[in-house]
Length: 407
Ligand code: 3PG
Ligand code: MG
Image 1 (cartoon, rainbow, N blue to C red):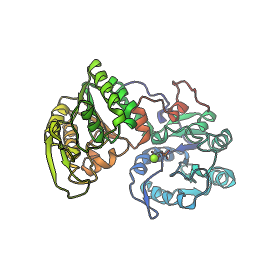
Image 2 (cartoon, rainbow, N blue to C red):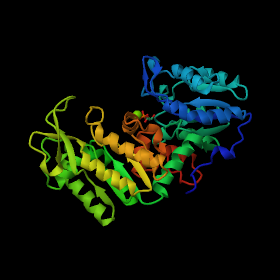
Image 3 (cartoon, helix red, strand yellow):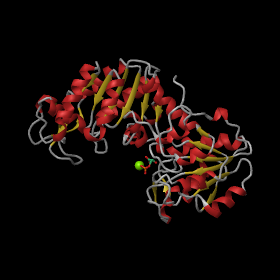
Image 4 (cartoon, protein in one colour):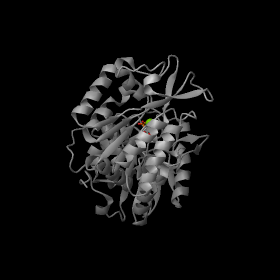
């Protein structure tokens, strides 16, 4: 295992210290209630460890995109309640993340207390990585711990700037995310494969290029696959394609060959004339998609092909659904392949790391969210990692990466 680029909590004695802990409480909410607790559950171990060892835990997070203004509907206060329930410990709340209210709340803390500060994005300086805001945040703590891998692609005051002022660490969730990504892509047990789905090559171009260089097998699904099929000269009816990406798709196929990466495209598809639930469907080979029909999922032969490819792998990275999984029956391909990956994982034959965008909902829909080796809490940050980008939130706490960012 490659060494992590930051100090972990193994090297921090939190007792009596004010710990500024950046978490990601940007959780889905409806009518003032949290609808998916995953991100909350995953930060519990870090908070508990720090509090139980006598740290004074001061939590920082953004919520949604208030764009530097106080938007009462985007307050973190309701999330303090959900967090307290998940922790089984009280969580107090301050109505700003800096200034007199935050300072007074932080001053009154005892060892082991937990305080949540208001949405960092209510501050206009947050997204600008403003030096004044970074210093003001830092003045509340003795050390900084970043446990928000899912916000590490943002160079903001609470994810980047603040770290320049304080001894900095990665929390347990940050550590788990990075260990999983290292095990999947930096130093994987081979053969390593990737399944990449989604609608557009244009949004995943850098990701595909980076993955080609790292994996032995790259399976492409979702509407993106249609553009590859069209680039091979096949008729794809009225399937969604990106016409201006046909050359790019050809280049990617050539690169795959040059790099000896097995690029796997669908061999059959589930098609329909209409993009609506209950519309009649057919399964056809990719060589015979009729005019006026569109591919909305991979077919059973492709599922079999992918199942056999998976059984030859030791490691799998999964990003994106293989079909329009939100609209049954076009979820069947994703479900079947995800279930196959889950089964191999459960049998100890495959290490599976999944994340980014729609992936978590697709895996939850397939009933296998908890059967993968690791599912990332990150959307955009996971994608940027797969693209090979350096994440500013990691650079800021790094002991090894060069700090080239304006922090
Ligand atoms: C996320 O939900 O992906 C992170 O919390 C980052 O949120 P953002 O896309 O609004 O920066
Ligand atoms: Mg987002």
